[in-house]
Length: 320
Ligand code: ATP
Image (cartoon, rainbow, N blue to C red; front, side):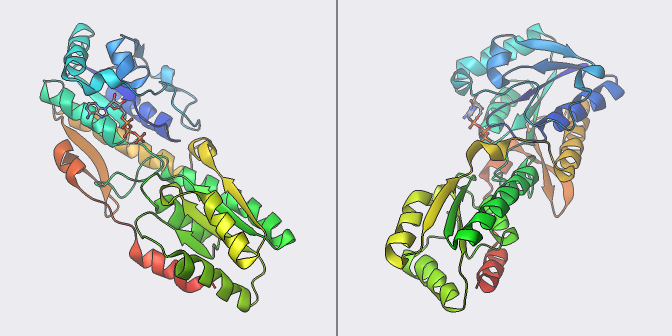
């Protein structure tokens, strides 16, 4: 392999820049040229492609977002789009591609690999919802951001003896909610993986906490569970506790990546180039039992991730 491309695709995540940097510098140190592709697969189809040098990734390891920008590209979901992507790779001399993104982006990488352009996926998403990997780039930063925000809400909930219902990101996954809830001492943590009974799992818990002297309450809700506003309304109307809703939203996707995200991104980016340098494509880099591993994309996409039940139980036990 002489030249590789690198792109970021799907939702952005803090640490994507650290991954781009690792890809560029690893490749150049191996004598491989690197082209940066802007705006995910759309930039590939529109030829938004630029040469990367060691210096083009200076000063980015500490920056959130992605210097390559990211986008969703509907055209790439069609076979004609994938074939055009292959043509563009040929035209620009790109022999392999590192795709930093989530499951959807890996599907695109698989399609491109199947038509002859070896691609390696690097898991980049704050939600930690990629089944083959214990860890995804951006997860740690997002949780720390959420934790800081909930700490601030706790101060004011405490002063006013209120209930603060906080919705965190995660789509269909409750990992951010669970860990943030534990770290912030939430009295109720609601995740989409565990259907909840509003009476037993929410109202009774708060009422019990109230009966043992608690005067303010933090409820952390994963976005996949439903409306945080409705939950706050239920608490207020049923228990008479003044309740406020905060949807943290996109703030969780920004900010300077934590040490963990920078190191993970660097390791994963390095491994992706190592694979491509051996002409190995159609793989996703992952972390399993703390070790760097890789899987065939198909195999990776077929895996399922579960919520940490033990941590959920610990959360329940201590939130009284
Ligand atoms: P995140 O979930 O963190 O937002 P993602 O990579 O899963 O990241 P998607 O929007 O699902 O985000 O996918 C990103 C891009 O990947 C899509 O816009 C599209 O260009 C490409 N893609 C998604 N699904 C497919 C598919 N089935 N075949 C080919 N390309 C796909």
